[in-house]
Each structure stands twice: as structure tokens, then as C-alpha cells.
Image (cartoon, rainbow, N blue to C red; front, side):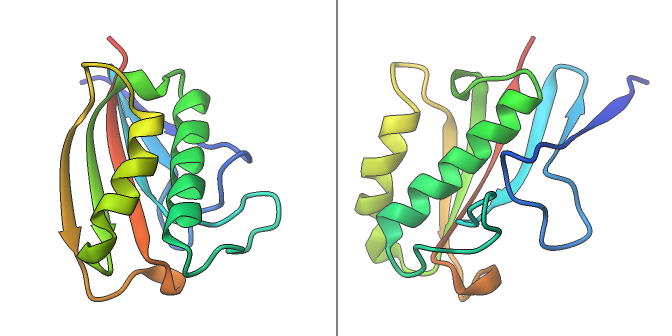
Length: 130
């Protein structure tokens, strides 16, 4: 059995619970859900602004991926959690700036009743670096 490696970077926020930012297992990186915490201040400075929250979330994911030796183009699957599906198009407009080209990840997007710290969006991902 292949070993797993914990991925940790100070360029993304510390987890808000008992989990890691990501785990590398073989040629895959499994990133935990990120919310809009600014890792430099450890606070959410854009609460309620879905575009700014989404940008911070994706920057956090990018930092975790880089720490694990991946880039955004290595992402093969994302899951987006929204507290309001009416924000779907706004999130898409930011999302497409981070995932460009014909090889965009497979994706699911679901509405949830609430997210940690009162944020509007959380995104997790899986990257393949083989």
C-alpha cells in the first residue's frame, strides 16, 4: 500500500477542525474544503461578498495545491457548496478565471443550509499529478 503525506502550508488558512489542508495519496491530492479565511490575518474580511469569498477560497485551494506539487490545471474534480444557489452564476464567473481551457474539472455544486463561520461558499477538490 502506498503511503500518504500530509500537505500543510502557511499560505492557506489553518483548518477550523480536526483535519488537514490536504492529503497526498499516490498520485492524487485530496484537498479539504476551503472557506474565505485570509491566511495572513486568519480572518474573513469579505463575508457576504460572494465574488470576494470565492476568489479567496480558490486562492486558498491554489496555495494548498502548490504546496503539494500541483497546479490548478491538475484538478480533476471539485465540489462547490453554496448557501444560496442564486449565487451560482457569480461563483462561475470567478471559477472560470482559475480553471481555464478545455480540461476543466468535473464538478458538483450543491446548496447547503449553512457553512462554517457563516460563509457563503466552500470548495474542495481532487488533483491528479501522475
